[in-house]
Image (cartoon, rainbow, N blue to C red; front, top):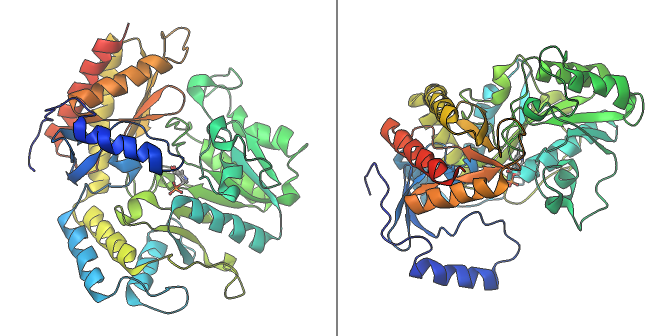
Length: 443
Ligand SMILES: Cc1ncc(COP(=O)(O)O)c(C=O)c1O
């Protein structure tokens, strides 16, 4: 399957796709389906559906296949490991590939202090691990997180998540002791201030108000932060903000947890998004792109916070050998093919093209992002900035029918997260489709 441009034989969902959709509706529980796309196979940045349509992939299965689908070196590593053994309870016994990956991640994480790694199977489990590490090591109970944050959907991480009401509705009470603060969302500043004259009021208010009222610093176990808010709308905080948050955590004697589940593994043009700053988190969580589709997550943390009893935290599948082999091969590909640098280069190109489009289409309120983690927030008009939710949805649907897979983010955003090695001409072909869809659907 080699090609540069999409090919739509039957507008999706075609007849074969419709059959799968009907069965899915009957048998699959609670979903958040984004589009009627039924994947048959995928290679690089191209997806083929069951009806023979070919699409360009600007989503990577939500920021997972950073080295492209079915990368030959990653798949060879997966197959090699499968031929050796597929599972042997890495928490109870030992195998080399898990130790190799742990050492690699510990050395890759920012900061000079020695690190340890806890392996899980998903993003939410890495956040659960971080919650437990923070409570256990600080003997404190309180957590600070941000409005519009997404940290997962299990009860602990859900308590930190504040992205969309639907994710929490019906599930209270949450884990006690979580306090949410508005994020540094300059396009819609919650305090109606302007950067930099605001002097980062959105960080200062934590000390000036929150710590003096509902979040006493001596009770604070950890501050959880996405260096770029993901599900919340690809919101990039202004320069200096993350450093202020780090200082607040340090002054309180709390841990700083950087949730890099979506931003990590080269996505933003650095291996970790915190590397755009001087911030060194105590715990860094990664999942999604780590295993190139093999389920794996890791909480990489300052070794001095390790549990002092064996078995304090554990699981059956975390650090599964096949997933570990996939992760090691993924890291090899990222490093050997210089994909972090490529993400930075392609991200600049993409941002430039989005900004050019914005000059013609007032519906594009804000283009923002780092590296190949870019998004547009769609608005009714640039003055009112009223979220253009319906137009945004129409654009994503229209793009799919033209052969470009997109995913929404935040209230009225679309995120663009292609593979870090997407060929230049495929990136441009995707952006051409996007522009056509915007032209068609902008009022
Ligand atoms: C920043 C962040 N943290 C945690 C999660 C949860 O990851 P998972 O869906 O693998 O549980 C996500 C998922 O989108 C995420 O973006």
